[in-house]
Image (cartoon, rainbow, N blue to C red; front, side):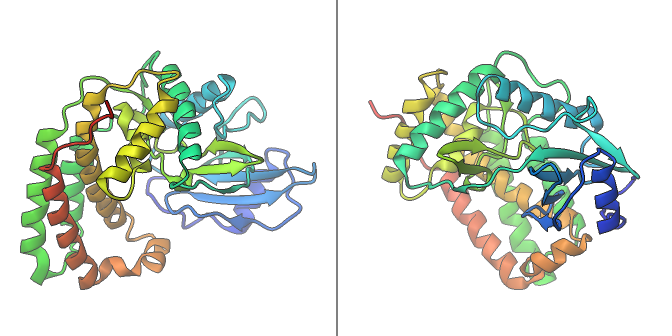
Amino acid sequence: MNDFSFNALTPDLILDAIEALEVYPTTGLLPLNSYENRVYQFGADDGKRYVVKFYRPARWTDPQILEEHEFALLAKDAEVPVVAPLAIQGKTLHCYQGYRYTLFPSVGGRQFELDNLEHLEILGRYLGRLHCLSAQQAFEHRPMLDTQRFLFDAKTLLLKSDLVPSHLHTPFVTILEQVINKAAQKYKVPKTIRLHGDCHAGNLLWSADQLMLVDLDDCQQGPAIQDLWMMLNGDRNEKLVQLDTLLMGYEEFMPFDANELALIEPLRAMRMINYMAWLAQRWQDPAFERNFSWFATGKYWEQQILALKEQLAALDEPSLSLFP
């Protein structure tokens, strides 16, 4: 595959790929909520339920995917509750007619509750254990969470897309550049570790009273706070309570550098801008135009101008601090 598309990924090809691993589905394929990759749940004749994940072509290299798998398996072996790939025929990464894919055990469960302090403390413990393990060595092939990729490259992708309405182009680019320059100035990272990379409530599940971390597709090298800050929501006082609760569990296993709290708003800006660029880059995928139709509307870009203005102000506010 030399493009990013799933044009040739038909239901018959998916079933043939699964059966090539000597796993035989007995149910239909249930699409799961993933736009970057194609992910399906199914039951097999061995009585087990599986998830098959087809990686978007040309996004990651084989060594990058395998490093994701190795990280997940290492965490699982260290009793960090992550959903790790299954080794079948001695391999975790397989290829069928140009598509790379992996099988995982199917893990159901209920959604993580951001406003539940007990859940936050448990998550803090697991992330502390994960980071204690991940700090022992760096990724060799996975990318770095840096401003070049998440700000400057993202800006280039956005402005190449021609999706910003002409009458909003100047105000959008003006505020975009201000946020990029301010975030890049403030994003100073003295130390990086291997991260989950995309630790938000949608990638956390309660399964049989066990919290599970799922989807390490965006694992990367970066500051520890990246795996924590998306758990903070509400006003400043609420965020302080949530942060204190997370770190209560986290620091049982891993010390936390309070200086990293100054990275939260730059990281938020990076996520905002990279998300827009991701949508623009994938816009030719029919699934994106179908599910994100609002992205091509003037109202969306007006909202982004306002959101970027608010983020520029947030970048100038004092960062969160730990309770004494």
